[in-house]
Image 1 (cartoon, rainbow, N blue to C red):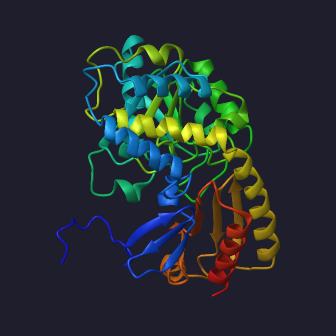
Image 2 (cartoon, rainbow, N blue to C red):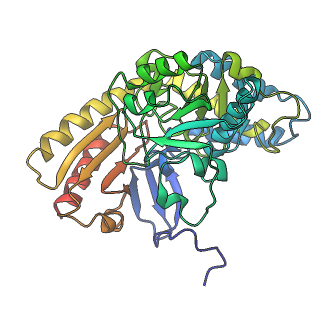
Length: 387
């Protein structure tokens, strides 16, 4: 009997070692990890450079608090802002905390405009976190169940529907719009190619802050360092986490222009946020992206994966749609023909780690995956669906 609370229902397997795209359990069995800890271990398990950075920093200094300057934190802020065309950074411990900081910045921005009851637009089927603010921002009633009353300062509109946003042009209480470039938790929902451009234009016209939640789509997952770079735009606020630390907990809220000036001394903070260890690791993650041409591999493997998968599943009647952007992959299945709830366990039995969201298989394999490993993955996925 476990002393853990019952909010998780883990599968009956315990992993003890990891190497690249593979995990080994306590019985010695090896599994192909096509989930990366839900998009976290983007550079694979136990990447030697990441491991070395953890060892070196842990032997030097782990924590001082933000009462003092932290060199690694300042260097990471500079590099991230340069890479994203942003001005300033706040570091937290998770994606939810990064999004929470964005929401607080939007509130402060509203006060600067004398808006007393600020509202943020977010999307239906979105996911932004599990704190009370980010839970309220999330457009998923199942995630919110049991936690009412929610914060009322959010209005949810349909994703990939610019007209749904324009309906609020005359609402003087709207202060910001928060959206994911690709909805990961909803099953890898990819909008029209110009959707973000249109959203940015509406935000600019109404003087709303444009907040992009790239917790899952960022850090190379889509084939660019940040997914919004496909649209050649710059948001007012950019939220990152997951792959930024390759398994070490770190979140970042980056801001530009007026949004970057909202947080002043004493207005927000985090005990552990941006400590010497996590920021050293994140710096190393950026080094690996640069030195090992990670994005080139993402794009090459994405194209190969898409061609191979679609050619092999073209006549499969239970597959309704295949959605791929970089190595962010969703396979929507006909829920009337297949019991999706059993697929995670069936995949585990075949030594493959995947995720099911709704009636879609979601895969977020490590960005270092090789062609040989993609072939193994495709073979296992086809076997799973056909079974």
